[in-house]
Length: 237
Image (cartoon, rainbow, N blue to C red; front, side):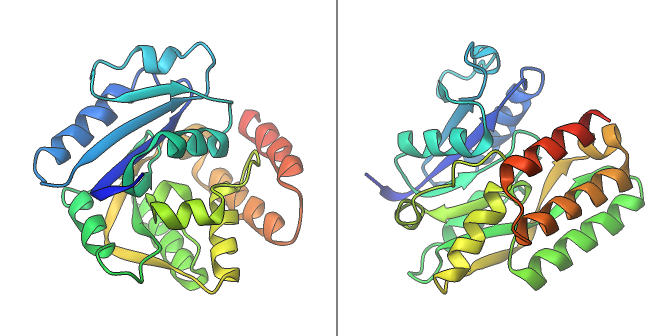
């Protein structure tokens, strides 16, 4: 059942013990500066629940689920009671007014889903270029990625049937499904800030080109299961 203007923040995690408390504490700091009702739901893809076991905040709702971001986010949505579902990566930070602007954008009946523009937490100038390219791409295609703080009206998310149970590209797939229904995502002017860790680990251009390749192949019809194998090989390489 959905409740008033309540936001359910759903965070899928796997091996995030070192950073999850920073994420939760940051969100709680934002919650104290808004009159919006918020619940935080963390879904651990580790059956042993190592990440959620490390969470200090007792108000955070925690559970485990089948490993896979789509499956974990759907599990969180099953537990959620808010009017709006915000799916947030563990290494992504909302802007100071993020919760308020989400509520404001969802006040009308026309908004079904939305996302923020992207910023990357690094002083390196190359990331300003990556940000610009990512934001231009998402606006031109109307398809944001999961690290842009995707949010949905709860009833609409349920009507869509949630995320497809696929190992990769679940964010792109659900937005493409929306567009086939004649619906679109709104883009908020504010930016979320995501960690640069995956670019730093894999190499800026290797990571960027890999991501573009995956999306292009998915749109061209390559099965997500094959793309997941490609992703794992290149992530390890």
